[in-house]
Image (cartoon, rainbow, N blue to C red; front, top):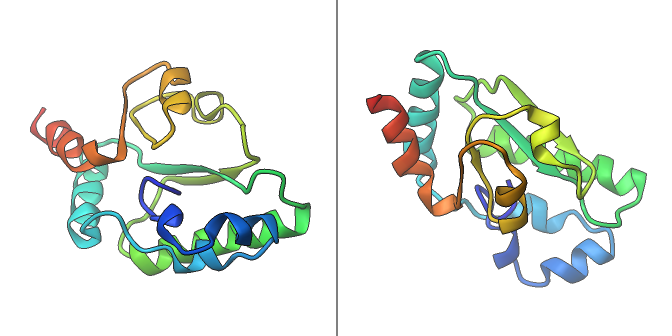
Length: 139
């Protein structure tokens, strides 16, 4: 989510907030795409028989309580910005968890090169989301 759908890193003071266990950046992050159009594509891809989901990390070094608040903020962000999407799954896992081992494959969109490299199927930068989803629909 962070840096892929939600522009967490553009929130002023995001890193200091995370270090101080303040969830503000997760709540205030702006969208990175035309979300209405993205929702239509995601729903169409799902109707075509594909699962759609979210796998995201909690905050690096966050306490158990803080990470629970981070999870709640992420669920709320998704509900606020993609309310028409009925996700097959939303998995918010501890920071650093291998995303492939958590989900078992498919197409990954992620801003971190390390996550894309560790993914054993197709993986793309966030800027490719619309193009790749349209390609999935055309096949």
